[in-house]
Length: 305
Length: 226
Ligand SMILES: Nc1ncnc2c1ncn2[C@@H]1O[C@H](COP(=O)(O)OP(=O)(O)OP(=O)(O)O)[C@@H](O)[C@H]1O
Ligand SMILES: [Mg+2]
Image 1 (tube, protein in one colour):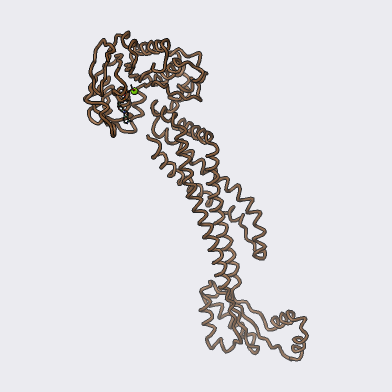
Image 2 (cartoon, each protein chain N blue to C red):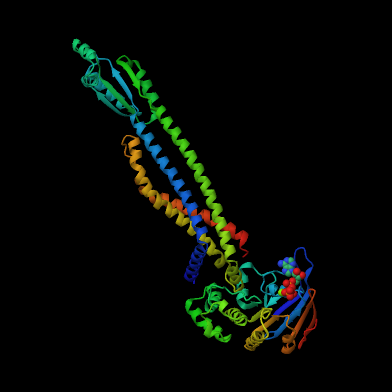
């Protein structure tokens, strides 16, 4: 009995979808646009988060030690720093390494090479590169380094504060997100309205059937449900179409984005694939709920049962 | 079978469509309701299928007080009352068979039941041989017979016919009246609203006359008097 009713409801819904096929397709298209937009928002979100993480990775404090500090003392400082709760890692570059890389960097500069030759000892000290566990912990680390036990040994500190870069990424991403969010909202509102209108038109097109259904004693839910189902179908088709459209598009864009971030391996397609069930599931459920509400209002208003 | 007890109905912004109407119809009766245009005949039919509710009074059908019937019970009421109208109300894109089957489909009948019951009622209205035709391929009388077949699909105890012959010529009219009489003989209570004087007079059945929303005549073997 239930299956028979479901079967016939589905049949009526499909018939109705078909009878106003252009209107139905327009509805599906708007739902499609809404989802393309929403998913684009997710993609922007993912890319900006990844970019920011990338930059965060590069933030550190470089501590240039005085040349006279001995290796054993440096090892001791390194261990002490490593034991601080805020510190994630400390990397040590020896005085020789620093000198070598400096020489390499200024290979073409005869002046510098000359000066270096004249010196009989290495003018550079070792370097400790400190990374904090989180961005907010750098101030504490810097403060600890100001302590005389350390500061007397330190030639110079260099806090490579990339927070400006992060802020800029955030600002750009926020702007894009705002625009896309607004566009998404507009599409969603249009989708709700057009679903409402589609159901309204479907009710008008089926006036005869509805009148006859009522006359011959069709249950109220039996009359209503095809219209609700039709709206659900529009939503589901649109949602599917958006994913079918987005996958190839994202694969196409992917290399350009990677390039833009110097080959960092953002995988947008992978992001959607990994979270497919969550993203797709939530979007599907959301559009179904939205369309049920929208069509129910249309039914309440125009279908007098 | 049908009891209207002191029923009044007023539409918004209008005079009373029905005023203190009391009608008692016994099971198995064949009753004609006559009256001038606007006298309230269709209003009676609409009240009986609970398309509208009375303002005052009480309506009982087959022992069921439908005066304040719940919305979700209305479909059950409609399955116990067959209705036909002047304009047939058939679906043009469905065949005769499908039009009749439609009434069963929408009430959740199984395919098996549809296949067995539809031919039976088509047989009653003598349209078995035209079950694959579309309404526009039928005469007016045949169309009305399809509508009657559909109204019989749930084996109703009451058949309401609102000017069933209003769109038909004399020959087709006689066919339909004969069919209604046949259905009445099977035991179904028939209430027919009509303008057709000759028919009413030749029937020699009960006639209720409405005038301006009131019952003015009610005779066991009535005549068309207006
Ligand atoms: N929905 C409505 N809204 C307002 N007034 C209505 C409505 N339906 C009917 N009426 C009025 O109620 C009165 C009775 O109408 P009804 O349809 O019952 O007449 P009738 O006897 O069936 O007429 P006819 O022979 O022309 O079909 C009329 O005055 C009509 O104008
Ligand atoms: Mg009328």
